[in-house]
Amino acid sequence: MTIHQETPQVADADMQSLTTLLARQQMAYRGDMSPSFAVRRDRLDRLERLLVAHQDAFARAIDADFGRRDAIVTGLTETMTVRAALRHARRHLKSWMKPERVGVSWAFQPGRAHIHRQPLGVVGIIAPWNYPLQLLLSPLVGALAAGNRAMLKPSEYTPAFGAALARAVAETFRDDEVTVVTGGADVAAAFTALPFDHLIFTGSTGVGRKVAEVAGRNLTPVTLELGGKSPAIIDASADMRRTADRLAWGKLLNSGQTCVAPDYVLTPRARLGETVEALKAAMLQQYPSFSQNPDYTSIIAPRHYERLKQIAAEARQQGAEVIWLGEPDDANRILPPALILNATKEMAVMREEIFGPLLPILPYDRVEDAISQVNDGERPLALYWFGEDARIRDQVLANTISGGVTVNDVILHLAQDGLPFGGVGASGYGHYHGEHGFRALSKEKPVFIQSRFGAGGLLYPPYGALARRMLAILQKFA
Image (tube, rainbow, N blue to C red; front, side, top):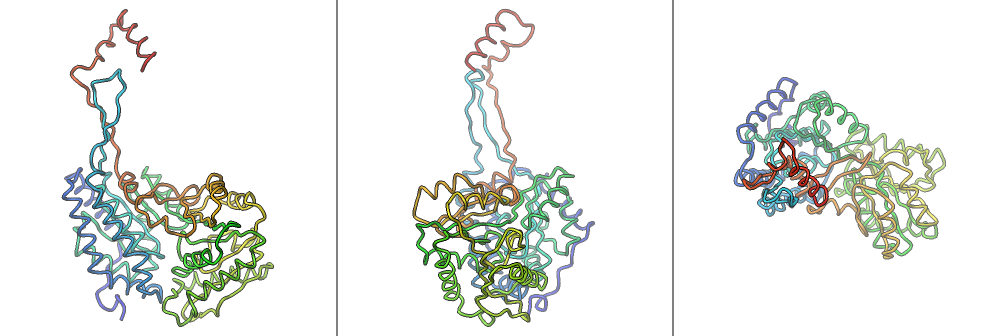
């Protein structure tokens, strides 16, 4: 029995209801523009209680939306990460809220200067379907910690989860605190056009460009968490078995439907065959079967399933070797992994973000060639490097730009609440997670407090000899 059958549907939003919800949150914000620590802590506590109370229902809903996704995958990648973010925020919230004292030039002493972090107002959050819980609630943690109100828009590809979340939020928060808006692409477009005080969008680069354009009409600041072709570079010094185990896990988690999944592998030419065999062995050890294996996730929708099959078929037709590790199950949208050799930059598999269990493996001769391969494309959301040679590692880090990096593993930089998470260039801009999210969703207001003993009056007109002497001193020492 699905979530749809267990409880009534949540009605989709329209433009009028969106405008009304936003106005209600804006009015509530103006009534309390600087929520106390106690108020913010209470909202974070309620969010955790919501997550604990509904985690099983959320996992069932996500499983229904995908067709098959194990509750363990949802627990590890979504529920656990949001709860970790909540714990981190509660632990540090009081210190984040304190005004930060900054230095004052001697010429303006004994005045004082501080940075006060103030809530922006109402934050809009739009999440995709691949991690629908984490990509809504993780940025919500930062929004609530910073004292904001929030409106959430789940993907139309996860209607069961969207409905379950809407009901849970309505039970836990007033709609002038947090609310969930459901609906299709038309609702998402109307949501994007609202004059939020900040908008967080996670999704594809193409849609991200449109979101930035629409939000720009309202001068709404935007955090864009996009994607791209995240490379994994294997160094000659790498332990291949350990590398293959970690690459296989990161690539096949959620069947590759992960924005920071390794999108292609660069390996020394002398180790190409070893890399292929090690990856095959690691993938088949973690997933001995695919069609009937509950650990292996379905592709979200027929359109995405057919796209993945098509780009693999195109690669084969254009001369690539495609090594399938199992048989596709069209009825259940189960696509087994495929390793792709001899891929060229003209192929879709190397032009587009894959977002599935296809993995091109490319040889390189020198580390400079691998770096050039990365830099010839748009800047990726993540980069992975495997090896033991610190000099080569530092060379790669210094000469590539990506949203984030994990060394000798994949994805795990995303799980560190002390690190900012965000893209660069075509993979997005802006950050959230931990204090970085708190600050991104706050107005960092500079405040200078003049002392009654301030000497500024010595430079008031009419100007005379004293003013000229004071100016000379200031220009020399200020």
